[in-house]
Length: 245
Image (tube, rainbow, N blue to C red; front, side, top):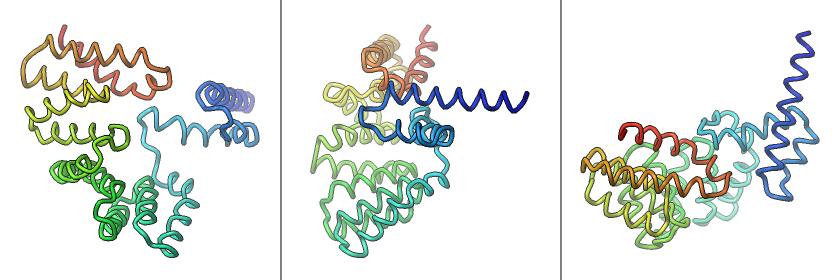
C-alpha cells in the first residue's frame, strides 16, 4: 500500500513538472528532455533549479556547488590561462552564484585593478555590498556604475541604487530617485518602496494606495510568468494595503 502511494506521488510530481515545463519554458529548452530521460530525478532537479528561485526559497549552497562545478572549473581555467578582467568577472559571477562571496569579491576587485571602469565588476562589488547590508558602500559603487552606464542591466542598477538610498533612510533622495525609476523602468519594487515612504514617512495614505494599486495593476497585466516571479512583492503590497483599510 505504501509503495503504491509513493509511486503515485512521484509520478504525479513528475507529470506536474512536465506540465510546468511545457507551459513556462521556451521552445527548444533542454529541460523537457531532461525530465523525459531522467523521470523523477529529473523532476527534482527541475524543481530545485527552475522553480525554487521563483518561490523565493533559497537553494542550498551545497546543491549550487554540485550543479555549477563545471562552470567553476571553466571559469577558473579562464583566469589561469587568460587572466583578463572579463575572466575575473566571469569567475566572480560563478562564485557569487555559489554563495562564495569573499572569493567573488576578490575576483571583482582584481578585475577593477585591471580595468577600473569595468561595469560588470562594479556591479558585482555593489551586489555583494548590498547582500552584506553595507548600503553606503553599495550606493557609492552604484553611483559610479550609473555615471558610466545609466541603463545598466536594463535598469537593475537603478533599482538597486534606489534600494540603497531607502535603506540608508535618505528619504527625500530615495523618493526623488525612485519616482524617476518608476517613470523610466516601472520596477514593481520601486512602487512598493515609494508606497512605504508615503505611508510611514509622509503619512500620505492616498499616495501609498495609488502606488500600490498601480504596481498590482501592472503586474496583473504582465505575462503570467512575471506575475508568479514577483509573488513576494504582491504579498508585501497586499499586506501594506490591509493597513490602509
